[in-house]
Image (cartoon, rainbow, N blue to C red):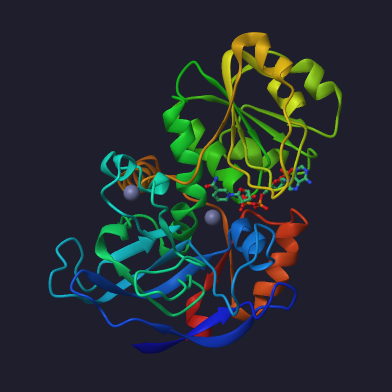
Length: 347
Ligand code: NAP
Ligand code: ZN
Ligand code: ZN
């Protein structure tokens, strides 16, 4: 075991504080990563505040992790000391169920092992990336392309894959009209990726305050959802709507914007239900779907896609001591467009 510096939530209601946590000794297939940057995902906030259900404290979160390999177990074949690597939202799965066999480890029927708050194989609770080091099974470690700077690579491990996966599954591309609801961490990556895939992208944001940014990220159109005319104007328009909003919004209003056989995919994860009237689905034979992160192979594909297309998140790098302030700004939708913690600040 090694003791490493970290930032943890002592409870659901107190600010995060500096602390130390334990990392296990390397098993034969484990990789030790010296973490350089960790992104702040809105899921970190839902989790530490107990919004998705009770968790045990103290808890270190963070599942947008990048750094360098500093040690490998005896049987490690995929990674070597010095490699630039990343870890996303899961660190293990059963590997045997039909979904794992299909490369969809995020949908492991036994439940994937989350990077934080999950019960690890040794019975301990997994602790996330707001820390200086992490030990991870090599199969759940991704290669970070040389052309993507570390701090910009971090958010790809959750915000990137969570938007790439549904865009790819529902075939965003030339000729398709895609709307992205909410221009935050996930939303801005959805815009960049969908545009790179060749889709005609529209941003649906609460106000027009970030319009210039949205258009610069590759959107062709930008509308304020606070303006009721928006929903009238855009009726029956989109093939795919990706909803990244962290709070409950009126699904019926967004479903009405889908054209024939269109799909509204929920990736935003408010704790409250999102009620739907079936009649909103009957018209245009619409679908209401959900999507959770992405598989390991698909995450590698997304990293390589972003490198190839020169896409990277917009990040604001902060010191570890600024995490609580960053959380407050995320909650106010005052994020441009992902906070990333410089882990050297807690080393
Ligand atoms: P974020 O950076 O806070 O972005 C959310 C955006 O939603 C905000 O920027 C804002 O966009 C909009 N918004 C916030 N509150 C709103 C409200 N009350 N009404 C309407 N719009 C509102 O969060 P994120 O990190 O992108 O995460 C977004 C959600 O996805 C979270 O719930 C997170 O837990 C979830 N998530 C799910 C997965 C998955 O696997 N499915 C993975 C990662 C995250 P505008 O200012 O443009 O309106
Ligand atoms: Zn996340
Ligand atoms: Zn499985």
